[in-house]
Amino acid sequence: MKTITFIGNGNMALSIAKGLKNNYKIEVVGRSLEKMEKFEKELGVDVEKALMDDFNVEDKTLIFCVKPANVDEVATRISGKARVIYSVLAGTSLQKLRQNLHPHALVRAMPNLAASVGKSMTTLTGDEEFKDEAQELLGAIGTTLWLSSEKELDIATALAGSGPAYLTLIAEALADGAVKQGMRRDDAMATMRGLFEGFGALIQDIHPALLKDAVMSPGGTTAAGYSALEDGNVRASCMNAIESAYKKAVELSK
Image (tube, rainbow, N blue to C red; front, side):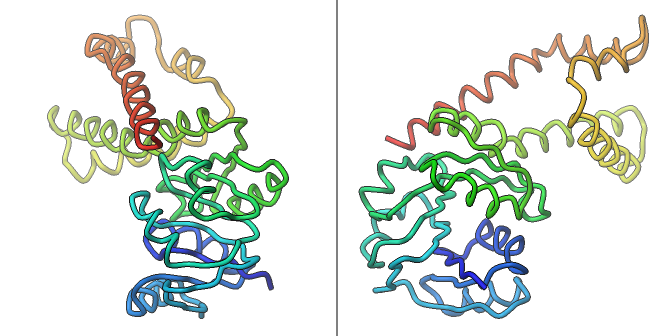
């Protein structure tokens, strides 16, 4: 069974490891044995554990899950030339990773929060010869999409990586609106969750505009609510959110 080595043992590393544990042997490298033991317990399978200092990554397949600000420091703690590094660090360029870690090959990956339930939308870019392997590996936690440039990956970070936070705002606001009109909180939350579950399936095959047209009858309730959203500049705010998050990703990469 092939070994996948995680550098870092935080929430994203654990989410990805949960998707890989049935098909790969998991090795985790970190600063604290106690935290790695907690990682192992939550993962539910035995893992190889190693402290970071002087750890040799020679010819290993790495999933790099440290904090972006710690790249320089971690690079001084490990040695050797990895076979390939899959980095999930937001705003950390391929150039910076190559300069610090010197792997044979490198792929940037941007999973999202849904990795923990096997439903991540993960975008990828990097060395083309690892495209198929990257999609197979990260496909264990959801859907993958290979992009042709880091610019596109940074845009995708703003959309799919940060997107769960935007949707939580909308979800909470919709439920609050129902409560405001007199619905019990528990019922409003249950209704909102059902809405998101059904919509998530529909949007896979139907264009958003067509879904909207199918729901919105002339002079009806949906038209009234939709008009209120337009009055509140919700569409423009969503577009501005993507722009702001993308600019931040570019800023972080410098």
